[in-house]
Length: 108
Image (cartoon, rainbow, N blue to C red; front, side, top):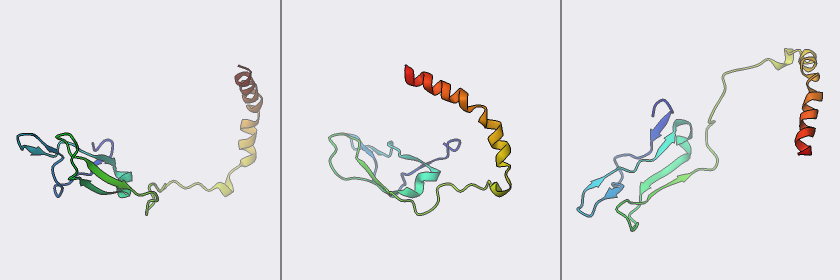
């Protein structure tokens, strides 16, 4: 879990997600979320609605617009001092090859 930056959204305050016909209860159904998205997943809960199963429904909402930045790069580039002419010269010779490949694709 930690390798993939996953966290468990369940917590012990909620009802169990599973209740057997003998009355045994557990929270076997787990909701995982990446750390970077956890702030947009809200209102996680186990519903009391009858589910026609021994597993209970799990409900949560996903906020459309996150309140904070999901990823902020610490890498900065000083593009004002880039040698754009040299960059252009490095790639300009590739354009005819790309055009030829696109033409081949379009003719198939």
